[in-house]
Image 1 (spheres, one colour):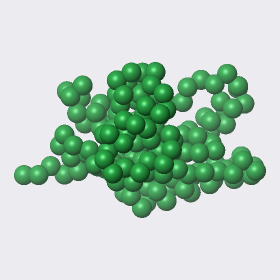
Image 2: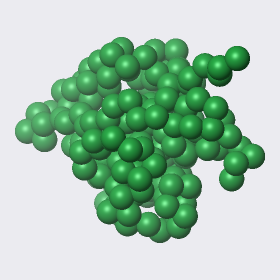
Image 3: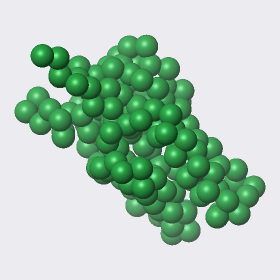
Image 4: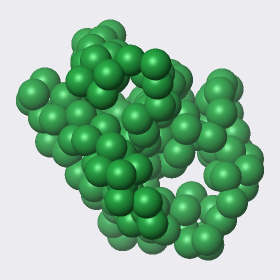
Length: 165
């Protein structure tokens, strides 16, 4: 009997650019579904920017029908104002999938990097390269989408295949 696929959305929170990536996990394989970014205009007030992110992510979830979500935890920023704004975007990244009824897991950036590349201090270009290797046919445009796909892969490896690490 063939095992059913579990569709996972990974989300890389950001106020200017929020990355997202969707994969299907079936048995011990993962398959690329889609990825992209959601942008908010830095010329608009914060409330409208958060609304743009909310609406964009809700549309992605509606179109791709994930069953679970994985969100990258944000690192502490030295600029308190920037950290606060990023935290608000992160709230959108957590709330939108939760409002859609999805279980949401959070993973530290270093854990995601280590899971995908083998080192917790990998550079963005290394993550992009590994995503292209692990997900043939993926068209992850830029580091934000690649980071989101890396979060989804981490969720798959840690939650669904814990013995494979």
